[in-house]
Length: 142
Image (cartoon, rainbow, N blue to C red):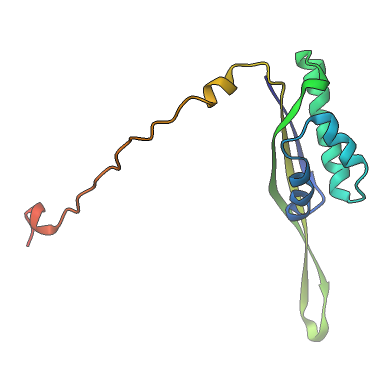
């Protein structure tokens, strides 16, 4: 069963948040928590909060055991930017943007049948589709 947690409008750039998310992608939830607690980055604290929320969702809403949970997906998207400014030399205006990011963490308990469906054999003998170019002559135009 898949359980997700969304955290929106995090005051950090998506690029910095992705760097922390790449370290824990695919790990067990408990191992990822231990790793994130020992990291000094701001992104690690934010991802840890999201992971804690996803684990709480799994335990309280679906009665899943936290020891069996694994991170199946971590998605980091760009959020809006706060646009501020500061006066610069000769009457110019210096634009300052404060980026935000959205974080989605999906945990999988591994107790459903979706993994068996995903491992179904893929057809390899499929022929490529041939397309023909229709010219003006074939359309009846000059």
